[in-house]
Length: 319
Image 1: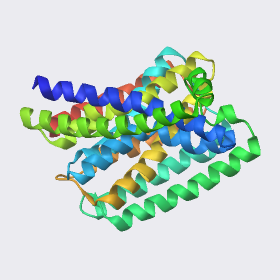
Image 2: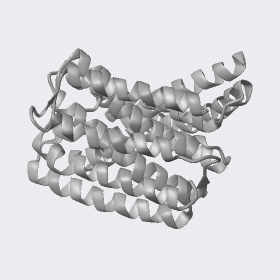
Image 3: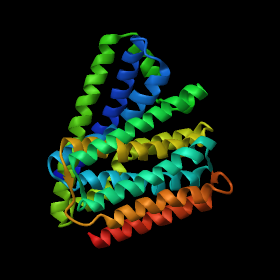
Image 4: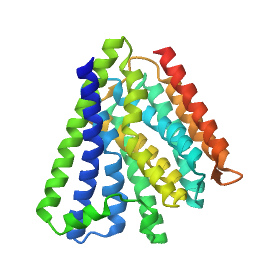
């Protein structure tokens, strides 16, 4: 038991710190190559923040573990219910017009559509489904790039932590490559540790991998989003917090599930109807809470936390 918990904790640490080094090293290399900040923000940084979910889901898919689907669905539920809910209790979160008009409706659409796809395929995704999801992800990235070029406001695309570290790495290309390669290795190892540790804990307690994936693993891989969201609130950029979470959910559903299913078809051992219903419910409730005030205040944040708590209870009861 202790070894499994240690493996899980070490996995989370490797995932989070590895993603940081991967982002910082890659950004430094890209800048040295003369790649624009716009492209860096939309690709390297955005993809890097989804590295923990991607690493865990790919490792789980290869090993045939339910953690692959549970991680993505649970992470998306945690992003809205837990992270936005908890952050809104600390500081009200605003939302910009673009996120409200385009990204939130899109995340509702793909949450419901991907859920229907999973249930329609007997609680799983095959390689063809994965290719379809990746195609929609590329279409979404084209839209984001077009909107970003129109706004020309790089800071609104993504908040990069560790800017001082990036400046140091820019001056040392060799060190930047070490950070990038080391970060990649750490993320891969971390994903492997999380899947093995999570599966071991599930066996010890006699519960499903899905339960561990949608709860413990999902919360762990969502920690980077939690840090980013709280950081945005602290810097009086709370309008970015909701956009960051919505963007993360889109990446998880289209890119993480898409790549995982393309590498190795994913099938769950039980029905995912409950998780899909909660993920869809939170995606639909979010714009309703924002509709009048264009702000997620403390009472609305508390409501999101209540929904997330209900999800945890129902998941634990169902096993």
